Image (cartoon, rainbow, N blue to C red; front, side, top):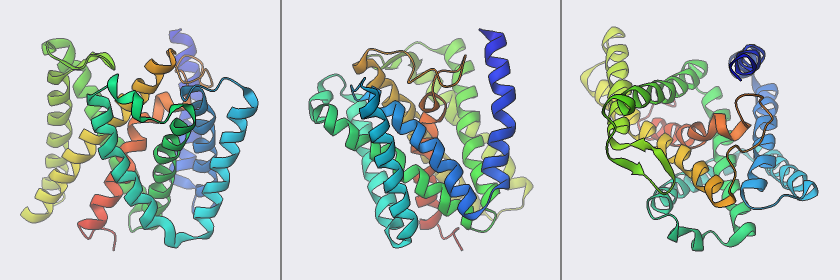
Length: 270
């Protein structure tokens, strides 16, 4: 298994670096659009559909929705607002699972919720890419999530006692969450001080980091919640040794749109 994971990572890493940081404009939108469509194919299974035709059809529908968003950039603010509302609602759904599953609207409703997971993430990435220092912003949100994951892992192993969401993901603890938050905030503080940010800028950055990391945890737990309901361990086996696309980007689907909205509210988008 370890060898398989290493081989997959060695193949995917250069592709991800090229796709996220070297591609621009339409090429970037198409690259991440493909990732989102593969995620949609997996989400249909999480929603309860095993039929290949339904899963492919859902991926095509999401692809058409992406094309519409690309053709109508004025919809970006609506999509991002819908994403923020969804992740606020998802927080409540995760905290009240399994009772909350009655509000998903069944398999068809779950497909609609999948669109709220995937479309805002794509829209936010496309916007971040267009903003000044776009690559740096994309790397920043990814690093925030990854550092928080690492901090949560070690803090959870060492101090974890109280379960964060036992009905959704029994392995996560409140102590791990605090450890992940602390790690991301320390790194943000160090970066801000090294770059000579003013006190107001540093305070904004810390708030943005805090909220981004918190919602990234909700993204992770949301996918876990749907997988638990569907009775599956991984969203697919597209990435040997790593599971599926959604298993790798679940935190980012929540973190990226919230991060973009927070930057826009803070006036960092100009």
